[in-house]
Structure formats: structure tokens, C-alpha cells
Length: 103
Image (cartoon, rainbow, N blue to C red; front, side, top):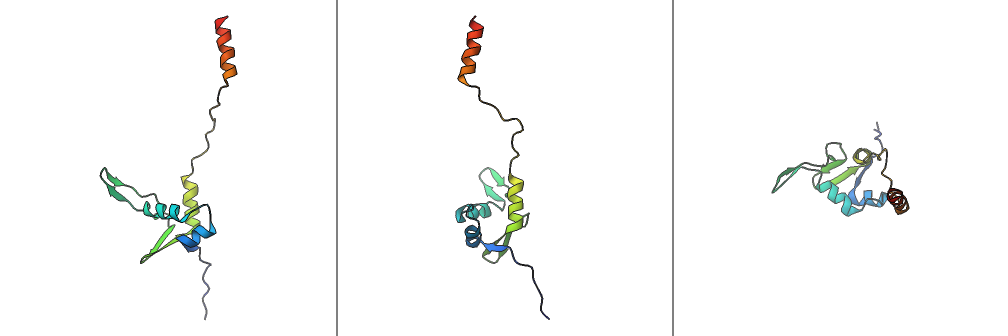
């Protein structure tokens, strides 16, 4: 009897970086380092949530990234666009309003 396993989306840091060039190995390793809570001179720094969401899998020294939870975590980190972005007033409008005040 043969068992079928779902196609794995687990990749090493190097494989993940090659498959998704927007994520360099250095950037991924930085995120992995910051995934766990750590101590500093100012107290405990909380992890970034990658471990809790299941994106990081550790087997001994091997670190694997699960693609689906990783990208779900990335989407959750995104800041929503500002509903009313500030508009820059042109200098022409300022000079027109200054002229109106002077009159």
C-alpha cells in the first residue's frame, strides 16, 4: 500500500529565496532570528509571530519555511492604505491666498 502525501511547500532559506527573489537570504534569516522572543538591556523583545503562525519549522539545525503561512503572515503585517491621503498644497495656492489676505 502506498501513501500519497500532499506536495510540500516547505523550503530551506536558500530554496525560498531562489523561488521568491523579493526575499533575500539575509532578509529571511533576519526575520527568522527575530521570530523568537529575546532579551535586551531594556527587557524582553517579543517575537514577530512567524513561529506562532506556523511559517517556521525547525528540525534539529535545519530551518524550513512553509510558504502558505509565511505569505499569510506577510499579508497580516501590511498596513492598510490611508483612506484620505494628505495632499500637498502647491506654492501657487499659497501665494494666491497670501495675495487675497493682503488685499
